[in-house]
Amino acid sequence: MEKIYLDRNENNYGPAPKCLEIVQNATRDLFYQYSTDYKRGMKSILSGRLSEEFNIPEKRILLGYGAEDLLKQVVQSHLGKGEKLLVPDHSWWYYKEIANEVNGINIEYPLVEGKDSYHYDIEKLIDIYKSEKPDIAFISSPNNPTGNSIEPNDLLRVLDELKDCTVVLDEAYWLSSDNKLAANLVNKYPNLIIIRTFSKLYALAGIRIGYALVGENLNLLTKLSNRYLGYNRISQRIAIAALDSAEYYKDVANKMAEDRKLYFDEFNKFSGFKAYKSDANFVLVKMPKESMTPLNDFLKQRGIIIKFMNEELLNSHMRISLGTQEQNRVVIENVKEFLSVGIN
Image 1: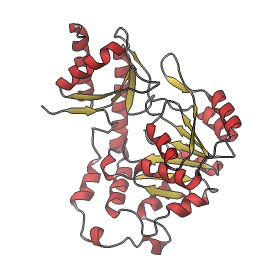
Image 2: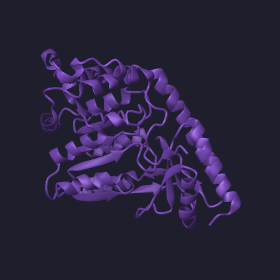
Image 3: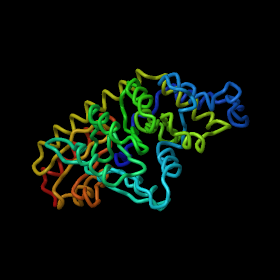
Image 4: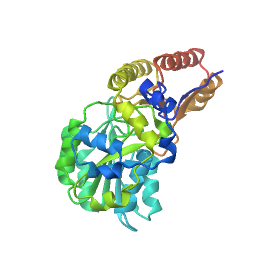
């Protein structure tokens, strides 16, 4: 039985065909020769391409080993012992861990559960910022695991208020093709870093490549993170092939949007279940706590692996990564079967 893995927020559609062609046609020089892009005054072909995409100087484009690596670089460059990192209370555990690694202090601000989605409590965020005076603030949009984004007007207000600290906008789960807003933001706010990855929408988690758009005042980060011999030459070419495959990924994003709505509509029909609207490649579902283990066992027996949450704030929830449309319908049908036979 082939298992369906929907617990790691991967993109089961896989990368665009052009990405696979890069691997199939890789030449020997990509392995044994260093990049010579520095002779053209740039770090790499990918940072040069992204500079064109966003219309910002190439020196303010950083490449990393996925978004994970870039987040760590920011913290290690800008957070010292006893200094404060402001993070959402519902967020990826890794945020807090990287602050702990440098003996920093984690300060949380709330995300609030609404009628059909979570949302940022902007007033509370700003109040905490003013009282705690953090050195770095993380904003995740869309946020993992709640799936909500920060509204554009709210983001502008936050960035206007948080002028005295480094602000990281983590857009790893960004699924849009519009780069104009990101470019405008990072040009307007010199203390802002926007981090994205090729892991989610582009289905390239295995090649581990992400990028950051860096505000002009963050010279320490750009200095410490600079790669003078460039980045992995094959990974860069695969990433560029993904950027060249806009129609393929637009189709994938449209299918994900359809299935986010499908999960939202179907799970909210089930007694005791509450699905939340999401802008990411996953959905969060609240459910009766006593049904979590039986449902988990039921699905595993059928080769379906999803994430059942066991965290302080989310301990009666499951997070379902979006699979292919066929896989998502298999999940829904199996949950219906579980509920119909009343397993407990």
